[in-house]
Length: 123
Length: 184
Image 1 (cartoon, rainbow over the protein chains, first blue to last red):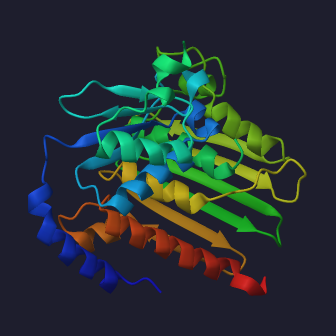
Image 2 (cartoon, helix red, strand yellow; image 1 turned 90 degrees about the vertical axis):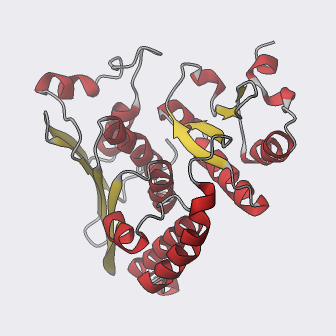
């Protein structure tokens, strides 16, 4: 059974790292559209795939969070990637499989996966 | 929505946008009584009586990026199509309580789905907000209260990956208990 004692151990481990990670200005952001349209189109498994793949690769300077509807509901699930110093990229019609590729190519290697971007989808 | 848990994720975000700092999500289900009730209660900015009437209308939204607001109407529909009921109580400055009741055995009942995933994502994406999640079924009930976790965690945030993993496992284990595991 999960106990609060176990949570204390997690805290102690995390506190050791916490000072290094505080408010890193170079942190990348993954924003998953999670309004009604995004959720209905399957945003939840996409968000989970991002979180799992980022954890698996041990990427420290990436935050995954939800955002609202940005008005392109027909392209949901929509994911925006913001890396400081680089252009913001909007990926559309995402799936968990595509999310894994975006983590590996874009977040790790800084190569935009252009076939999934909104620019390609609307062409 | 394919799962009620997705409706919960959607509607709970209205609480986030209403600047609540405490959101209670309660799921009570009983096969014996053939019912399931979902309550989402927040201490956010609340709504006027007029606004409460309007949010049930799919063609009302406070947003400017689009012209429809389907979150609450879809949630309401999911309950009423099972012969259940739907209710919103709200007071400006005090908060909003949304209650959806379902007849579980109805042919149009949407499955509850992965409610634990919903709770985990809500905590992960809103680590500054407290959530109290209570789930009860025929064989018992359990509660996850992020205020208690926060006390233990001190300055470690709730969206720390190890903390989230602990939360996920805690929810999973307790859910198995209240459903009675394989004996069911």
